[in-house]
Each structure stands twice: as structure tokens, then as C-alpha cells.
Length: 110
Length: 114
Image (tube, chains in turn blue, cyan):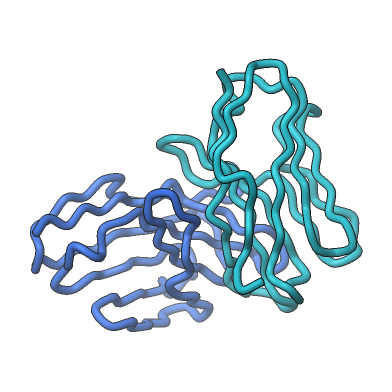
């Protein structure tokens, strides 16, 4: 069974600070996705990474896929209150349902 | 429709009753997934439909859970003889054809068994 471990589980920071959250596994994934979920809503896809070592940027968010395709990180620069939410990583071998981590709950305080 | 639609958004039911949860995926999306999200837990896979293939039911926690997808579109998740541990948010997602596609989720059905 493929498992994804996310850390930290909770993170509370001040507006303007930088942060990094991690997603680790002992299994290799063909692709890895990051989602953000707000209360009362379903997760929304932020990015998909497919190549080992790949780095993708989405405004203040930087996503990296590990060289061995077993881990990933999400770095947020100058966090804003609007970044508050549950960040989920999810991976899969390609044609089977995604496995999700338990998420990192981020709170950005103004 | 423009997005994945789930109904009802909230459901409170008495222990032992049956419930039906509905998911209307994005038109043209061939794959449909049901996940369950409990407080403090990640998303737990339940069942997956892909086109006309037999569904992958490997995530269903017990035989009280079943799902069907009619006409390759709308799906219904049925929970019989509900138990308190079934309380959770049930999320439906769909994807277009092709592998590695991101999921589009509905807003979920929050089920509370009392």
C-alpha cells in the first residue's frame, strides 16, 4: 500500500513569513499533485508534477518533485491570509485512484 | 454543468437508516471517484468508475456500502444501515480521459449519523 506522509500537520504563521510543507513516501509515484481545501469545499488542484527534480512555480508557491519521485515540497513565499487552508498532496502510479496524505493545515495570521 | 455537483450538501440520519448520496460529474469526464474524509484524516478512497469498465470497489469499507453509475454520468453512493462511524464528508471527483489528470471535486456531502 502506498502511503504519503505530510509534515507538519499544523502550521500557524504571521503574514509575510515563508514556509515549506513536505510530502514523503517510501514508494515511487509517476506523478504527484498538490491540492488546497477550504472549509466546506472540496480540494482544488494547484499543480501536477511528473518529472523527478521538477520545479514548478505558481505566483508565490513553489513546488518541487524529488529526484527519486518519492517526495515533494511546497514552499510559500510571503504568506498571506488568503493562503489559509488544508494543503493535500496526492500521488498515483498513473491509472489508479490517487492516494492522499492527511494534509497540512495552514493558518496565516494578519 | 460547470463543475461537479453533489447532493445533498448536508444529511443527518438516524443510526440504522439507509442513505443515498448523489454525484453529477462534469460532462465528458469519463472517470468518477468517491472518497471519504473524516475529521483529522486524509481522503480515504472508496470506489472508482472508469468508462464502461467494472468499477474498482477495493476501498469500500464494508458490504453496507455500494455505488452505481448510470449511463456513464450520475453516480449514487448508498450506505445501508448507517452507523455512527460512517459520519464523514463524502467527496466525489471526476477527471477527463487520460492518465495523470487532476481531479475536480464537488463540495461534498456532510453525513452525520445520530
